[in-house]
Length: 339
Image (cartoon, rainbow, N blue to C red; front, side, top):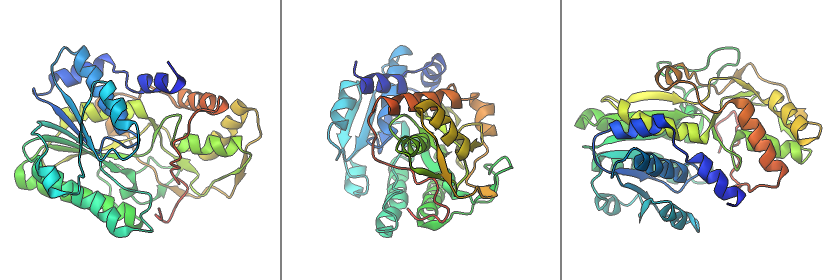
C-alpha cells in the first residue's frame, strides 16, 4: 500500500461495535448524501466494511456531484455504489432510490463570505429537499458546534440543552439546517439524529494539521482561539453510524467531539518537540472559546478510541514525511464567524 492507501484503510476500519450496531438496524440499504467531502468517503467505506463483517447484504450508496477527480472511482473500488447528483436539484433528489437509512453530510462553510446565498441554499435548502424525500427513513444529519456561542474556556463547553448563539452567516445557516430538519421530523414523524461536530481531524486536514504545518514552516501559531475540541475522523464516522440506532422525532441532538479541552499553545509546543523545531505563538488566549461538552456522547458510545496523544503523533509523523495536505484549512482561530 501507499501511505495514503494505508491511511484510508485505517480510517475506514470497523470495530466489532460498529459491525454489531449496523447489524442491529432494520434491513435495507444506507444512502450517504454529500459523500465526496472530507469525511464522506471514510464513512461510506466504513459502512461497507462493517456491513460485510456483520454478514448483511446491506448496500451502501454514496451520492454527490463528484466534481473532484478520483473520489467516485475510489469509492466504487471500495465496494460503495455511487450516484452522481446535484442535491440542490429537486428533480435529482426525487429520483434517488428509496433507502430506509440515510446519512446527510451536505454542507458549505468556506466561501460563505463571498457567496452567502449559495451557503444558505447548500445548508438549508438541500436539507429540506432531503428530509421531504426521505421522510420515511431514519436520518442522521451532520451539523456543527458553530451553532453555539463562545463559552468560558475553563468550563465544560456548550451542552446539547444549552441555548444556541450562532455567530456569522455560516453558523446561522447551519442552525437553519437544524431547524428545517426538526420541522420535517415533527411534520412527518421522521426519526432523526443531528450531530454537532467539532472538529474531526486526520493527517491530511483539520486543526492538528493546521497547527503542525505552521510549526513546521516556522510560522507563528495564532492563539486567538486558544482552546479547541477535536476527534479522530474514524471515531466520528463510527459514532455517526451508531447514531442511526438513536434516531427520534423530534430529532435527537448530540455533540460529536473529543472529551478534552485542548490548548492550542500546548499543541504547538508538542508539535515543535515532535518535528524538531521551536514553536512560536502569537497573541494571547481569550477567556472564551468555541467548545462543546461531549459528556452525552461518551455516555452513549464510550470514549473515542483514538487519544489526543495518538492523534498528535500520527499527524506529526505524516507532516515529517511530507504527507499529502488536502489544502482545506479549518480557520479554527476565527472568532467572528467569517468564512
